[in-house]
Length: 129
Image (cartoon, rainbow, N blue to C red; front, side, top):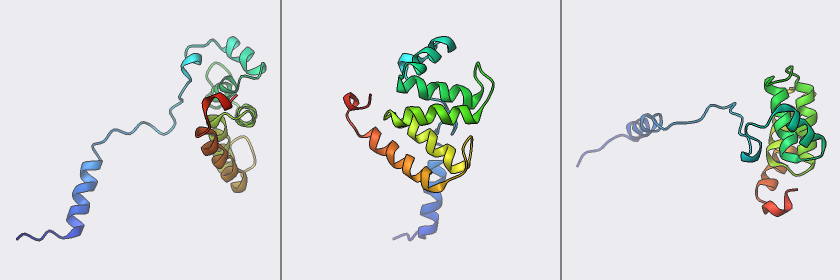
């Protein structure tokens, strides 16, 4: 019988896990309906109250895609999307509050919006608005 210390088993598992592909942290996931959407159309949809478009416009401002980078405007659009029940908007707003990007840093608000994001992800899609 061969005894292998637990440390070595853990080390082997760590090496095996390192080969699994993980996406970059700051990847922007666009809803299929908004991929390739021109900025003017996206702005029109966001101003009309489309939560997915509001979140997508916030992403544009956050990353400076087609507009001047502006974290405050990004947070405003994420807030509108989050209030409309958009889970990604709530998550992005929580991230902004956690790190103070475009809004004053506030851990309590970050936790609140992360919780809302989790709730919104588990609601039936017909209820999301």
